[in-house]
Image 1 (cartoon, rainbow over the protein chains, first blue to last red):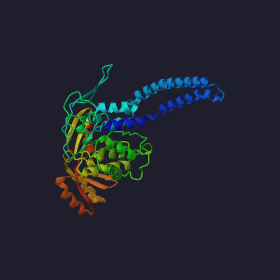
Image 2 (image 1 turned 60 degrees about the horizontal axis):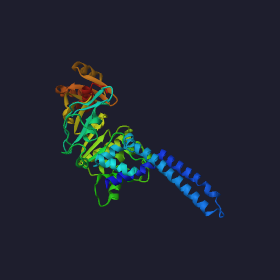
Image 3 (image 1 turned 90 degrees about the horizontal axis):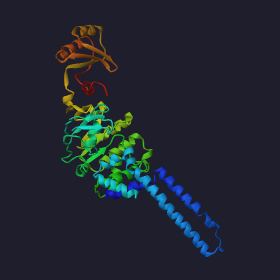
Image 4 (image 1 turned 180 degrees about the vertical axis):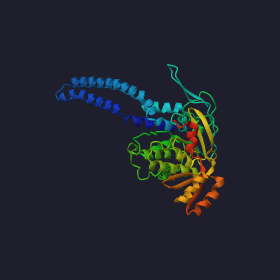
Length: 112
Length: 298
């Protein structure tokens, strides 16, 4: 129960991190830009060509997700405990009947 | 217990605590005093299990510090309390209720009651980021109380507050004292400690320099103060003959005399036409005791 609560508050905190919000916004913009070739398609375009283009875009987006996602997780995970120590929020949380490993596991799950 | 902070490179050592030993009895309000850097926050960190002592033995409610069974019975308010600022007060209390593991049939009723107790009703929808310092501190006290603790540990609960905020927090501590909670709190604001504490521990540069009941520390001296509304020339001459110390302040004229001579002096004052407003035994203030022990420097 406590681990779940910690994971949830960690998850909520991530969306208050301006760097992470910026990261996600840039990622979405790049994905949208990548979709622009789809606008050149018309009804007369050959299905094989459309299929090829969609497959290519999907591959590109998936690699973007994988690359950006890893960076995002690494960025947020690096800060997830340190920021609690820096702001002092960890003191009130660790004063609760929580073991250190439970706190770390909650942070890990919330960030993952 | 002893705690030494060491720098990994350079070999610098700071003795934050040196063989400090104390205990707090159930139901007692114990003030932990000391100048800045005396070791108060380090001691509290050790009690809460955040820091490990280099030597010595510490027991909190019969458990090791940091044991979840002990922490379940402690309400803690850290110095410079910080919360998840994007939450509202009730949401934060919900979070701490869940973390405390306490099961209550009506959590929302409990939270509303606590907000009422700390005078935060009416601000339920306000994010903590918009709270004033006093409101944050009162919310901190509410979160400390949410697990129905036996022991309350407050680290500098009034630091950084204006006089009104300080009074609100002290009133809260007073009300907790009345319901029989054990309270251990650190402070360097002495008059407030004098108001609410049963016992005082004074720490300086890591050493516990004094521990005892407040009434023992502030022992009554051998002199009394006699406050009069005015002093006639005749009385002033007589006072000079008796060797009485005269202090003319805003709150009246104080004559400081040996307790054995007070009757004689009061009768003479009356005979000389002076009205005696009050007679008090002179006590050391906590500030006097503190400054004597820590040498007036912080």
